[in-house]
Length: 480
Image (cartoon, rainbow, N blue to C red; front, side, top):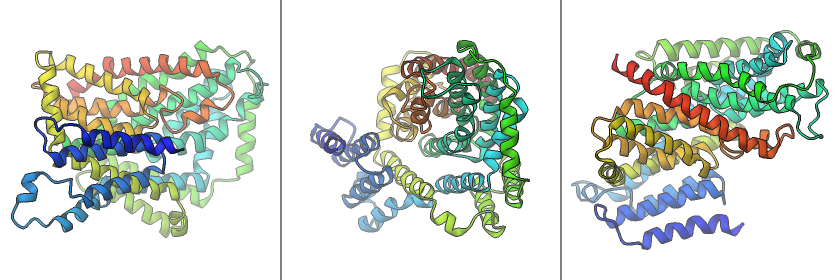
C-alpha cells in the first residue's frame, strides 16, 4: 500500500526540514532524517528489509553524509572513494558473515533431518506426562538454539511441525474453540523459544548485531562464553518455570496418553536410522560449539563458522547450490550489512555522542543502578512499538548504549549485556514481536485475547528475572 512507503518518506522529509539542534551540523541532521526513514521503512515494509537498507545506504553515500565536517576537511580525504568504502563496509564485517554461516548451519539441521529427529526424540522420552511434553519442547529448542540464529527457522520450521500433531492425539483440534491443553503446548513452545533466543549469542541474529554495535559505540567486547555465562542463571530459571507455569495456568483437560510417545516413536521409525549426513551435521555442530567456547583466543568465531560451513560442503552435508538458493541467508547478509553501515554512520557524524550527552544531562543526579534499570525496562517495553527485533536493535540500541556510557559510574559492560539479553525474551510480548509469533498467534490453539494476556504476563516475568537475577549476577561476574 502507498502509506507503507509514504510514512517513512514523509517522516524523513519532515525531520530534514526541522531546525538543526544545537550540537549537530546540517549534514548530520540530514543523516538522522535518512536513518529515521530507513528504520520506519523496516517497520512498515513497503519493500523487503534488505532493499530498504540498500537504498538508505546508497542515498546517504551519494549525498556524502556519513562524514563529520572534520573528516571531510582532513588532508587527502576523497569523498567519492570514501563514500563507496563506507557504503560497503558492512559486508567486510565479521559478525555479519558469522550470521550468514549460522543460517547455513540451520539449513543443514533442516535438510539432514537432524532438527526434526532431536525434537521427536525429546517427545518420545518425555511425552508420557502432559507436563513432560512441555519440557520436551523446551529441551528440543534448547538443543537446537546454539546453531540456529533464526528462531523462526528453529521454532516455526523445526519445532512447530512436530508439536502441531500432539494436541490432536489428545482429541484437541484447532478447528474448535481453544482448549487448555492445546494452549499449554503451543504457548510453551513459543515462550521457550524466546528464552533460548537469549541463552546463546548465536541463537538470534540481532544478538550478534547488538554486540557489534556495542563494540563500535562503547568499546565493550563480549565473547560467546561471556554471553552464555551471563545469561545462564536467568535462562535456567526461566526454562524450568515456563512449562510449569504455562501448564498451571492451563491445566490439561485431556487425560495422559501413551499415544504421544508412541506417535513420536513411529515418526522416528519412519525417518529410518541416523544417516551419515545427520551424524556429520551433529559432529560439526558439537565441534563448532567446543571451539566457540574454548578456542576464542586462537580462532575467531566467524572463522570457526566458516570452517564448519566449508566442511559441510566438502562432506556433502550440503551443496553450494543449496547455499546459493538459501534466499533467507543472503537476504539477512545484505540487510544486516547495510544496517551496520548505517549505525556506524550515526557514530561518525557525532549523533551518538550528542544523544549520549543529552541523556546524561537529563539523568544526572540519579543513582547509576537506578538509571540502568530504568533504561533496560524502557528498552524492553518499547518493543511493543516494533514488528521485529532487528529493527528495534538497529534503531534503539545505539542510542541507549550511548546514553548509558555517558552516565558516570554506570556499569557499562553489565548494561550492554542486559540490553543484549533482553532481545530474545522481548519477543514474547506481542503477536508481531518476533518471527515465530504470528504462526503461534494464528495456529488456532491459543485464543487471540489470551495471547495478548499471556504476552504481558510472561513479558513481565521475563523482565523481572532479567533484572532481579541478572543485575546482581552480572555485577559479580564482571567484577571478578
